Length: 236
Image (cartoon, rainbow, N blue to C red; front, side):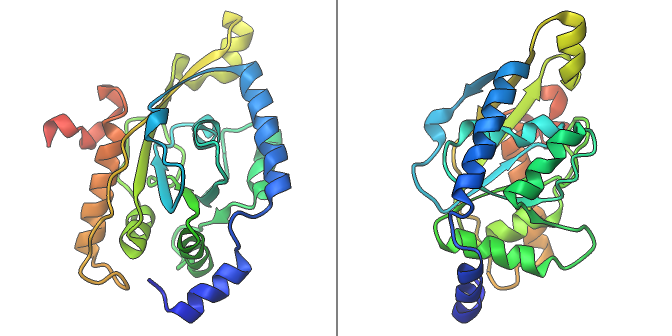
């Protein structure tokens, strides 16, 4: 972990939970919109812990799957990631800014976001991160270093979830052409971790790669085989 003084500096800057009223309004809006547009099926709710610290990880096939943790983990959440939401309607792009997600820019050190994330977890917070980084169509891509680095640095438990849809995520086409709501399915796995490292202050590249592969394998186990890519646990 970071030094105690540095951690306290970021705890003061990023108290958890924060923006409670704004996020309650956003959560309520998401619930209403999801109820109108999506038929959501959730399994594995019994695996969600009552308290943190907790790192929530999942696949990132569409902007709708970023809603999955909000729909399933009915507790205050922080998000970290590249939330440009390129395939989302313009109105949906206001949510990351209003929520104040912790932004990551690929190819930069992201010192502020990483320190803020560690401070949130140090306060027994719950942090959501999408290991693949960007939205993409399935199957799963390899993990970028961020989620694994965070897991090794903090040693917190990890909750995996997998989210897919029918009709290839064609949200509005399903409504206009098939006259029904898109079916979205989220499966929540069992908590795993903490992940071990010889040096929590500076995990090695080998440890980060192994941790990233493990995280993706846990997510893959919650998805149909055609979405698992190179991380099918049945092949390991």
